[in-house]
Every structure is written in structure tokens, then in C-alpha cells.
Image (cartoon, rainbow, N blue to C red):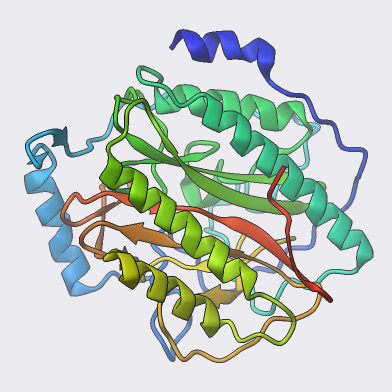
Length: 352
């Protein structure tokens, strides 16, 4: 906790001179918190399956159980009040709307000006994520991480994309241990041996940059370290094959193959996505083996964000309608980058 307080004076200040306008397309289909892919249908199904509903009961009965006799299952902490964003900062169209954002059809393809906007938002997202990773220490709360991330983003004239997105109450997602994704920062203190995924998205000059990484808190055991290592390798392998004309389904094949090699599961219910002027749009990027059609386009931007687990790949969701955890309490790790398809292959926009 002392680290979080002291770090206020260390926060980098990266101002962008780029300005621009946002173009937003809203469909009639709402984008629910729980992305679930159904082949042959609209990529995001809004209705949880029967097994998913049953899993809710499983979670409530077992949330206090110990895993392997050493680690307690996660449970919700207390939330702090919603943080404010100065009026002069450009906000995404979904902020303040009573309707969840729509899913945009069609890829995010950019002209030269748009590419520069994407590079700026991606660069800032990467710098914020790198800074957030330095805050990960035993005793620090995930809410303190959210506070620092929020402040750094607005200090740089950007908006924290998750804040107010479909009702999400915080500025970053912090997913600890068995949390697959969409963890809400709260009063829980990080513990020695935890792993935590921090998912940062910034909205700068009308464009979103989206990235995440999984960090170690204190002394992490070798099994958890290996899961994180293999998850990062699976992302790197997927990125390496990206280029104009490459089929999207090659991404899932290479990720699934690498996970299989090491005995890990690949979460299928959450996907990568187009990103740019919109937070989420086509294409849907599946991280497991599939035969879906579609290929990469020059000057297109999208994310790849594999989630690997040590056990069950089946997600269950808490009563907050956001926090998604593994059904059996097994650890989950994730890494994500925003990518630009170029003539020479691919450019990672979210790296420092």
C-alpha cells in the first residue's frame, strides 16, 4: 500500500499532440459482458447456456474452498466510488448511455492518419500497462492499481475505455489467480504467490488501444510461472504468422497446439476482436482450433488475447455480471496485444 502512495510522484506523463474525431457504429444487438462464441451464428451470444447457469450455483457453494489446501478461492471485495474523468477529455460514445454498446460489423481498416492515431493509443496503453505492472506487490489492493492506472490515463489526455462500458465500474480489469478475465478492482490485497492479469484499454483521440499481461506477485511457484510463460509464448506464436491474406483460423490452431503440448486448456468463450474507433468490432478472433472463414487485411487492427488454464476451461460468472472465473478454481493466465496488419506482416502497436 505504501508503494501505491509513493508511486504517484513516479507516474510518467506522456502527452500526445494528435487530435481527432470518433466514428461509432451501433447495432441493434447489445454487447453483453459475457462474450460467448457460437460457430455459424452471430459471434456473441447473449444467453448463457444451461451448463453456465448451473455453474453459477457451483461457484456460490464453493467460493470459500481451498485449492490444493493452500490457496483460497477468490471472493468479491469492497468497491470504491467511481472515479471521475475531466470534462475536457474526449469520451467514447457509450459513456453515459443507458444501452450497452453495439457490436460493429466490418473490420477496422485505417488510412495513414488513422494508423498514426492507433499507434498513439497503442503506445500509451503499453506504457500504462508497463507502469501498472510495477505496482504488483503483496499488500497492494487491486483498487489501488485502478487508481494509479486511471490517473495516468487521464494525465495523458485519454479516457480509460472500460469505465462505464456496459456498466463496468472501474478503469482497468484486474484478474487474479483463477479469474479468467474482467475482474473488477476492489479492496482485496494481493498476496504472495498470486498471479494477476492487468487489462488496459485507453481511448485517445477517438481510437482505442487494448493490451494486457499477467504478472507475478512475490514468490510464485514454478507451475504458475510455466502457465504464464506458455500463455505468452502462444500469443507470440500467433502474432508471428500474421500478415495480409492469412486466415484468422490459423491463430487458433497455433495457440491450441502450443497449449496442448504443455497440457493446458484454452478458454473458448472469450475472443480477440477488431479494435480502433470502436472498442469491439469484427473480426472475431478464436483462440482454439476452428474452421471459420476470413482473412487478414492490409491496414487492419485487431487483438489477439489467449486465455490458458491449468484445469477447466469452463467459465462461471459472479453476481456482479462481470468477474469470470474457472469452474474448478484452477489458475488462468492471459496476454493481449493490439496488432496492425502491414505490407511486411504485422506491427505490434501495444509495446513500449
